[in-house]
Amino acid sequence: MLHLRARFGNGEQGYLTTVYGSLAQTTRWPLWKSIKSIAMGMDAPWILVGGFNALHGQHDKLSGAAFAKAPSREFKSCVDDCVLMDVAFFGPKFTWQRGNLRERLDRALCNGHWFHRFPETHTTHLPKLKSDHHPIPTCLEG
Image (cartoon, rainbow, N blue to C red; front, side):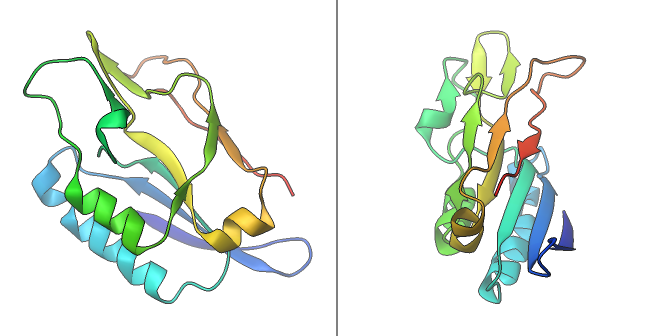
């Protein structure tokens, strides 16, 4: 995780957190703990973007084998406890694919301050190149 403070043209400040969640579910809890710690004192626009490598719910998964990832209670709890919301996206819903298994592991989340300040913020799930993940650039307008 990389957490940055930014100043906008009008002097207002906001925060950007880039995230890469471990592939192992059992080692992601420090990430959720860090995000919750930041959220506790956050009273400015805040956006988190990256590969969380966790499912928020069954709606984040399509097809695949029985051993595939189940929704992460810890990730869902982190999103809910921090009152984060998904940023709108364009392109395919699922950002990761292997065989018939498709999952949404990459996303942008923001707090209410960000949403109200930058309501047109969105991501675009671009075509995969050399990875099994779709890149997700984020566009900020407002």
